Image 1: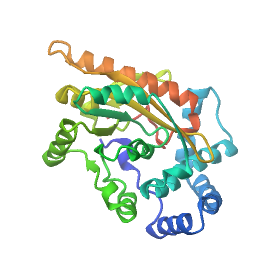
Image 2: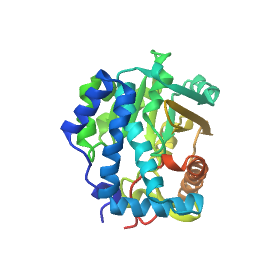
Image 3: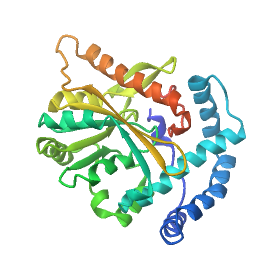
Length: 298
């Protein structure tokens, strides 16, 4: 059975994406954000299943179900982070108030000389990870993800900034894994999503917001294989032009014992799920998994 998120078709169209990018660059961010209002209203009215899953998520995270206004706010927050990719891809980080908490954690991890895995999620914006590399141009940053289900956004990224787009590596394939190892051996950073399941046979169920949910095990297995520090990353959108980046150490080195390998994987993954739950409660409107995260079972 297919993983749930892979069955969802990418929303939007190339012309609309290009129009919004043109407005953002030519007329400015305030005008582009105003145009998000009718776009978000459209998706609010046309996304019945996603609305229902969001309501269930809010019940788990906040103990309440949002009304139409709350759902619109959620779509608007999501649309805002997508819009801001235009500026991030162009390197215009000066437009934003990006507050990084825990940068010393990342610095210490990199000082070990083994590179670093940056474990992110679909809570908030992963794109702001590049903001940390702007002042350190010598730092190699790669992002390992599955873009097969988002051809429009992949093409858009290449149009806006081919260099940044080429730093995204497709999950799977020997060549890309060699590039991952090369990046880490050179002291660079490899970002990976810790909440997006690729296949059911590489999943472990962890407690997340009060119920069991499937989490991918690939990031923990990769960390064990490359023996590199793992730093958790949460880029939370706080409204207007502000982002709060939270960096927390998961481990300086993850080792999986041969006798208790699966137990070790579950333990490390649960630690990540616990922190994801913490920030989900703290920034509930930043949750951008628009499917039933808990019911993704084979």
